[in-house]
Amino acid sequence: MSLLDIYVLGAPILREETKKVDEVTDELRALIDDMFETMYAAKGIGLAAPQVGRTERVTVVDVDGNPLVLINPEIVLSEGKAREEEGCLSIPDIYGDVDRAKHVVVRAIGRDGQPVEIDADDLLARCMQHEIDHLHGRLFIDHLSLVKRRAALAKWEKLRKGDKSHTRKIVPEGVGRHHNRDEEL
Ligand SMILES: [Zn+2]
Image 1 (cartoon, rainbow, N blue to C red):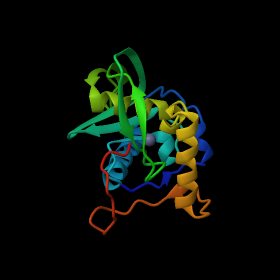
Image 2: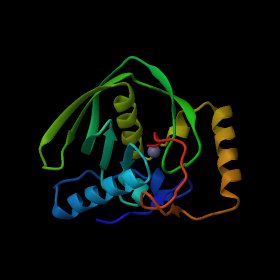
Image 3: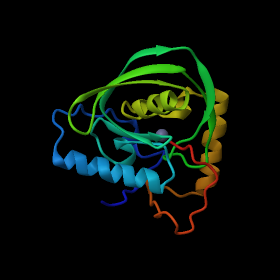
């Protein structure tokens, strides 16, 4: 397994539509394993293929120690509404309150190629909605009001200090990376 670089806001791939997966191959499973490793090292709870520069319609999620692989995921039911703060591994250190459905049912293909259906509330429901957005080129900042989105983008530019790179390196756990949140997706 290996750690993958994470693509950050400004990288065109984050705005592209992904391609539906036709077959779960060993190559895809290797990508999934690398995505989990990268997500854990980055202290995230979700990671989608475009965030590691890939076009497959696949995302990994782990909320509360329950790792899930979602290939070709679709939201088949969404109910209720909840507003919570979100962050994103592709827009580090930027947070904003996002309205999402409180409850969703997601149908997908699992790592073994078999269909799965996940019925989730609250943080897991939010995380899956955030990741499925990534698979269609959408980012959490797109859900913010114009004023809040502008403020978030201004803060991002300031934090970047002119850095135009499209990726960031993830440092393995225990190598003194500072972080103050553990819910970036
Ligand atoms: Zn994200």
